[in-house]
Image (tube, rainbow, N blue to C red; front, side):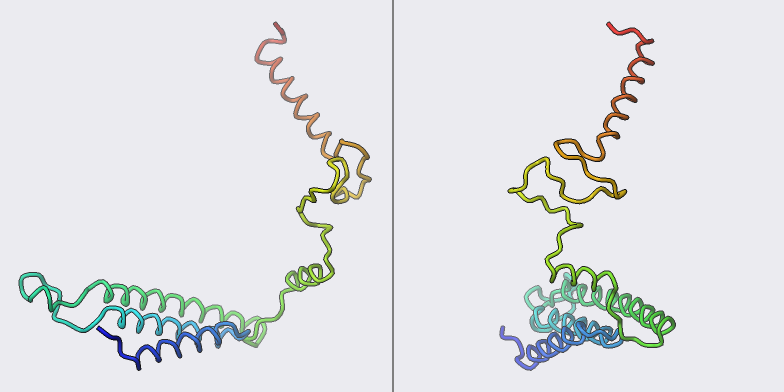
Length: 180
């Protein structure tokens, strides 16, 4: 079985146009891109299913000439998912229009800050652990603005001491204050 070259080209055009529109900043263009991708996937399922055959009812038709019901079920499922996603994206587009009277998404402030820090190679707020850095050297400043102590102690050692004192108190309560 050879697929119809026209349908294969249609799928390629739908996919490429859909991806191009999906990457746009406009919510409406992204919605149209998603619809084109969804329709391209449905046509791809139909191409993959092979030639049309008789209804897949066992005992009524010859088994060799029956069509495969699985691609039809996949297309129906894809249509339902596409409809739900379209409704969701329409709600997003409507809300975007209500808030900003435009469907073009603006740059996120946090994304801009992260991009600026990445281009400046600023690692001050990162969890990155440098293997060449000594263990006792602080990675970042103290969150409360206090100086970070020199040496192996850290700014949260008082929390560990409180936990140890709490554990000792629980041990004394359970044993009745008797160690032994």
